[in-house]
Structure formats: structure tokens, C-alpha cells
Image 1 (tube, rainbow, N blue to C red):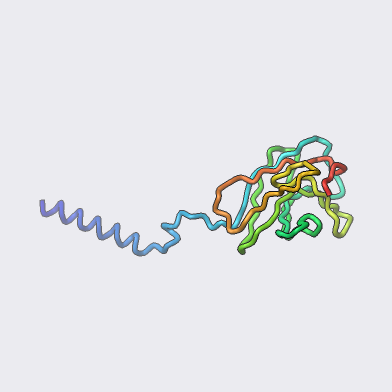
Image 2 (cartoon, rainbow, N blue to C red; image 1 turned 180 degrees about the vertical axis):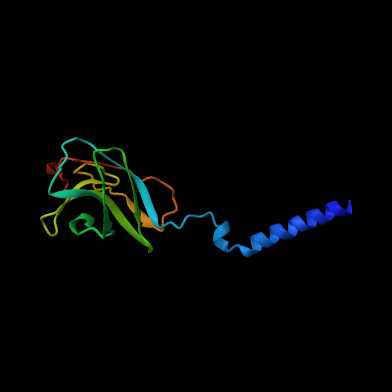
Amino acid sequence: MKNTFLKIGLFVIILGSLFESCDDSFLNLQPKGNYISGYVQYADTNFATIGGYYAIALFRNKSFPFCSQPVKAQIIEDPQNIPKYYRLYWDSADVFYLAVIWKDSFECCPFKLLGTLGCDTSSTCRDYERVAFPNFTGSDYNIVYWADTSKKLN
């Protein structure tokens, strides 16, 4: 009996020292919130194949967000393979609009807006959704966009 209590006591001490030696991040199951993710999918199949690239982009939270350059853009690799998963990282607190763009390789600044979060491919919609960082929602932010760059929204 005394031997059983000794084993239980030793087990409790070892277990307690393991938890004591771990820092808070070991027990913290809350994600950092430094990214958003989701899927992009095209609405047509007339892809541009040369002269630029498709990208998922973050735009500043302002009155006309898509009239300025994105603050961050991530190339959509192999856009014809759908749905395409993306993950965008941002490390400070801020609010953005999210869109799919075509960026010309030969032009310095212009881009073509092909789909937006909240409005997808609608050229008349202005109810764009915003995303905030840090982001702890666990939601997917999905966008349908035009592959045909002549159908640009801007």
C-alpha cells in the first residue's frame, strides 16, 4: 500500500514538473491570427497565359480601395487547377479589402480587378467585405473571379 502511494506521489511530482517547465505557448491553443485563408475559383475559362500573373491581394481600408496599389499580393500558382487554396500573412493590426487581380508584367503600376471578397465578379456591387488582422475567426474567405482579363471590374 505504501509502495502504491509512493508511485502515485512520484507520478504527480513528475507530471507537475513537466507542466511547470513548459512556457505558456505550450498550453495556448489560440492561433496567432496573423493570416487569412480561403479558396479562389474562376467563373470562366478564358485564362491569360502570358504577360502577367493572377494574384490574391490586400488593399487598404479606405473609401476607394481598388484605386490604389495593393499593400500585399500573392501569386496564384497554376490558377486553372481549382479550387485554389491561399493563405495570406500580415503581422500587425489592420483592416483590408481582399481581391483577385491580374498584374501585367510589362506595365509598372496598373492591375486588373477580377473579383472581390463580398462581390465576386459583380461590377455593380459595392458591398465589399473587409477582413481584420489579427484574425481569429477560422473562416475561409472565398472569391470567385473572372479568368478573362477583358472582364475586369475596374
